[in-house]
Length: 120
Image (cartoon, rainbow, N blue to C red; front, side, top):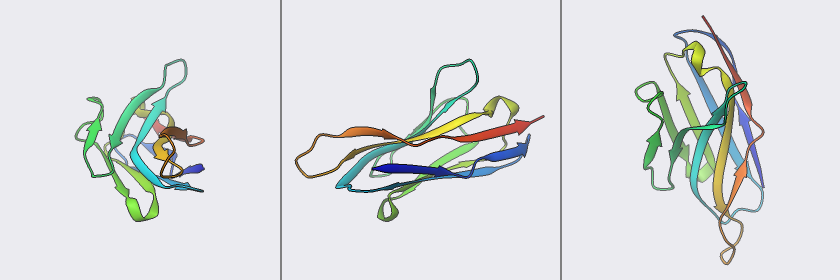
């Protein structure tokens, strides 16, 4: 299983970016998908998650600015980031909690990370 994240880049404060993360390989089902971020010198933190049925959860720091969504048919999760701030600068990682077969347990898989840099 591979998770391929894309969409990061350099943007000015107040700008927008859209991240995508596609899961591929032998996948039976995907439960929750989510985005996490890690800024230099800080611990990785949750940004937003979404269940298979569309229930979402997000960090207080991004509420009202970031929107998570997913396309189950494409095994893809998105993060629309608006009104970006310099403090949003971090490497953003996607995660999927999935089963590779009907009888397997669910495991977490991580993408490789994509850099988001917001200039002031």
